Image 1: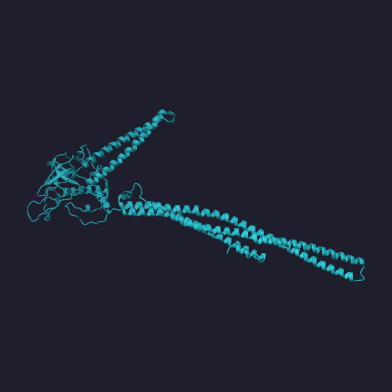
Image 2: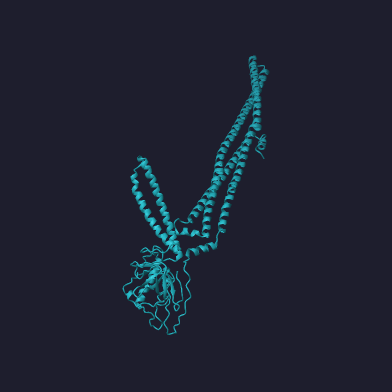
Length: 570
C-alpha cells in the first residue's frame, strides 16, 4: 500500500490521527536508514577481513621464499621445488586479488553508501519538516475556525438575550419609553454583532475547508509521495549495492582461477626423472667401479699375494711383509689424515682431493665466480675513468688526481683476479683434458699435511677402515672426535721396503713437497708397492732410496697378474 493511499484514508479522520501516522512514517524511515548503515558496517568489516587475509597470505608466501645466497636457494633447481616456488608466487598474486576486492568494495560500496546516507538524512529531515509545517498550519486554521465559531455562538446568544430583554421592556407598561428605546437599540446592536460574527465564521469556515482540502489532497499527499520515493530509492540503492558486492567478487574470479591454473600447471611440470638426474649429476664422482677381489689361498705355503690387506699380519702371527709394526703405525695416520681433511673442507686449492666430476664442477664454479668479480672491477674502473675524464674537462667539478689512487688499486685487484682466474682455468682445462698437465712448482700442493694442533671431525663409515682393509664396529651416528695431526719422522725412510706389486706410468707431473710424498715427472715409469686404499693416494718407489705417495689420478697403474690382475686408475 503506497503512502498516497495511506494519505487518502486520512481525509475523513481527525488531524490527530494523521499526526500519529506521520510519526509512524518517521519511525519507519529512520529504521530504513539504520538498515542501510548496518549494511555499510557489514561491508566495511568484510573489506577488513579481505585485507587481513591478503596480508597473511603475503606473509606466508614471503616466509617460505628461499633466502638469497643460501643453501636453500640451491635446492630450487629441482622441479618439485620450482613448482613450490611457483605456488608461492601465485599465492602472492592470489593475495593481490583479495586486496582488489577490498579496495573495490570500499570505493564502490562503503564510500558511496556513506555519502548517500548523509544525503538521505538531509532529504528525510526536509520532508518531515515540511510535513510538520503543514500540520502546524492546519492546526492553526482549525483553531481560528473554532475561535470564530465560539464567538459567533456567543454573539447569537447575546443577541437572543438582548431581544428577549427588549420584548420584556416593551410589554411592561411601567417602563419608560426611553428605557424601551435603549433596550431596542441594544437588541439591534447585538443582532448586528451576531451577523458580523456569522459572516466571519462563514468566511473562516470556508477558508478552513479550503485549507483542509489542500492539506489532505495536495500538501500531505505530495509530502508522503516524496517520502515514499525517498524510501523506494533507498531500497533500490541497497539492492544495487548487494549486486555490486557480488560483482566485485565475480570480477576477480577469472584471475583467481588463472592463479589456481598456474599452480596446477606447476604441479604437473614436476619431473621426477629430471630431479633424479640432477641428483646423479650433483654427486657423481667419475671414478670407475673397482674390479673383483681375488681369492687368497692361505693353505698354500707360497708367498702371499700382496693385496689391500698387505699392511696386516697373517693369522699365524708371522709377518708377511717387510714392514715393521712401527711403520704400519706411521702409515695408518697418513691415510686417516687425508680422509679427515676431505671432511673438514680444508682441501687443496685446486680441489684435487675431490672425485674428477666433482672437481670439474668446483673449478667451473670458481672460474665463473672470478669472472664475475673481474667484470665488477672492470665496471668500477670504467666508471672512475669516465669520472676522471669529466674532471679533466671540467676542473671545477672535482680533482682528477683524486681518483688515481682508486684506479691504481682497481688495477692491482684486476691483475690479481686475472692471475687467479688463469690458474683455475688451467686446472679446469687439465681436468677436461684440453691442456697437458702444468708443471709449475707447488701446483698440486694441498696443504693437507700442514701441522695442526687438533682437528675436529665427524665420524663416518670411512673412518672405520683399519690398516688391514677391514672394518671395525663403531657407532654409525656422527660424533665429534679429536684427532691429532700425524707427523712423519725419519724412521719412515729406515723401514724395510715393501715388495713390488706392479708398475705405474705418470700421467702428469707431481711436485711432492709434503712429507710422505714423492715427486714424479710426466711419462716416468715407477714401481707400485701399495695400492690406493680408497683415500686417493698410491704408494710408489723409484729406487731403493726413493719411495712415497702420489695422487692416484696422476698415474696409470698396472698390477702384476699374481696380484690383482691388470687394473688402471685414471
